[in-house]
Length: 416
Image (tube, rainbow, N blue to C red; front, side, top):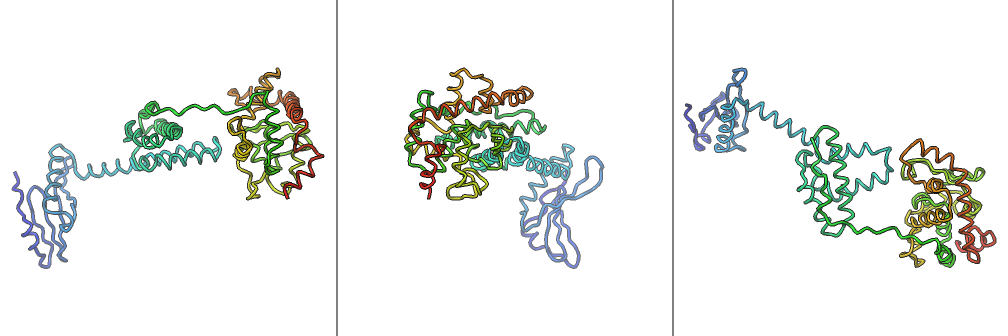
């Protein structure tokens, strides 16, 4: 049994190297090394359990590691050796594990997960989702190893967001966190997703259905548009979306290069569609007239409906909703509600349901069937679109429409 604690702080401070290295034992494999330049370092010397070879490991300088701390470290290493564990190999393994954990932090896995979404989701959707994680999740969980994340930890991250009343944000963040954890499972980094079901512990956001007018209210809508004191370009945009039945972001981003007047079709490329699938919109005589009405304003630009203040950019997708609010229709309909109005009206009039769905670019899960619907129903959709435009025009009789050519000159004067 080795005699321990041979050294004292006073004796260590008095030690000097006289032209050569001095090594003093404290017992139990702990040594103090004094170099010729009088710097002092701790060493732990031992015999490797497996190979039987003698080796040593540095414990730090006397200036940074006290005698008491050096003895604690040496005691830990002696206990490991008694269990057949090589201290140096143990430390190396711990470093490897730590480095692996840092390489597989929640942030790193989220970045990898995000890359799998590119090409499958719209860049704006990816950006919006990432911003949610940046604002509410990464500050706490970003550096945490994926293996250490548990349901209670994740719930605590979202509790403050719930307290702020941002229940929809809590729900979405919970979904995104689960997606990242499922990616980690599929990557073989964890055996199961511990966050499944965490959204059940939070208050549920109140479901609010999109506001939309009933078919009988179309005259009220057209009269409101007719009497509204709004920018001419916005008026054109409102009627363009109403006639084309597309989602709000799609008409706002309309480009002249997407329009083929000769073939009477508007081809929206996949990257601008919700489901990354090209959508062809048959143009009616009214929609073509709308384009001709707005051409003097934007025909020389990329976008049909440019921003009023940044003309090289498309107008914002919320432009129509803001205008509807100023028109007193905030609680009656939305830009997206135009689609519901069209869908309900067309179905009530007995048009082919699947052709109506194709006109609305609703998702068909069967890809072969979806392709069939896009081609087979295109002729039917032309008739549907023209009927819908005529239906709008019929209820706008006696009121102003941008495609009434006799009013075009007056409309253009208003924009100057």
